[in-house]
Image (cartoon, rainbow, N blue to C red):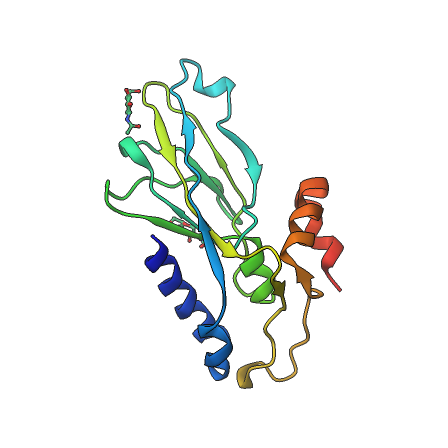
Length: 177
Ligand SMILES: *[C@@H]1O[C@H](CO)[C@@H](O)[C@H](O)[C@H]1NC(C)=O
Ligand SMILES: *[C@@H]1O[C@H](CO)[C@@H](O)[C@H](O)[C@H]1NC(C)=O
């Protein structure tokens, strides 16, 4: 999982800022394996596994166990949309807040929630992000982006996580120019 996250990370950064390969290679990041357990629920219409939110770090890599759906993402035109597990071996990769900021909004973080299943227990989750003392700087200076201004101010990961803990989804408007 560590190798996979790092590979995805290099691909994304090379796309965002191809001219700065050096800083990319030396970038320090960490993964956290967090397994969320969603027990089956006899009344799934009366409960949520996890309330609507965006994840805070760079990438969320998800393995939906037990061939059980549960993840829903909010799509502009279709509202809440269920993401079915593709197969027991497939992973779902979604964008989280710090990549949203780093990409200057080009890769929006995914607003999602989790439903519970009537009969099946489900486990999911891996989060990949930078060390807490890193500074997140919107990348706007590559040649393709001449004339694009940063939408967000620079923010330390730790400061961002503290703000998010207090203000939840309002945090984006607090660091927007
Ligand atoms: C999030 O993951 C779902 C399932 O693979 C996919 O349909 C959606 O496009 C992804 N969105 C982003 C922004 O990564
Ligand atoms: C799959 O669901 C069944 C029924 O709830 C449960 O007993 C089992 O532990 C689950 N397995 C996994 C890997 O979540």
